[in-house]
Image (tube, rainbow, N blue to C red; front, side, top):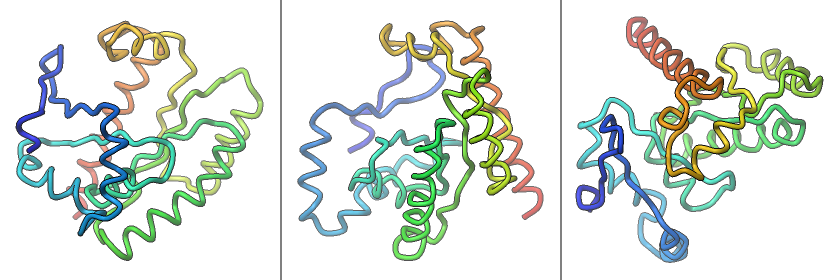
Length: 192
């Protein structure tokens, strides 16, 4: 059960449901399990009302774990490197989200597209960013996460970037993203 493995964060601001390499074996086991695409949703159900937000970090590949995350979620935040091939893969991901919505989770929606690892000095990054806004307009977050050494270093120290260097450009950008997401949710709830 989820309650037995939840851990409080070092900063005591949130709970973490950690995983380990056994998750790969669990994925193989899911393939023959009844309701294989709903296992995560069923596991999270007893605790979901205890939180304002539940963030599920998924691998960048489409797997049974990712499908479980989509089925368990109300929305998908798509981090997208501002590079050409990342843009190419976006349409496939959006089609997958639509299929999950159609067959398993009608409440699933696109929360937004987050431009990450953005290099402002690179013309290609600027072009990909422009195309995203042109094609997806309001679905693209205004916040951009820049390519930042401190963000890359933080995991090797076992910390989030907010604990590692809260004043770095990357940390400040992630805080701006959190604020933007809260504002979006507040404006959606007042318009409903």
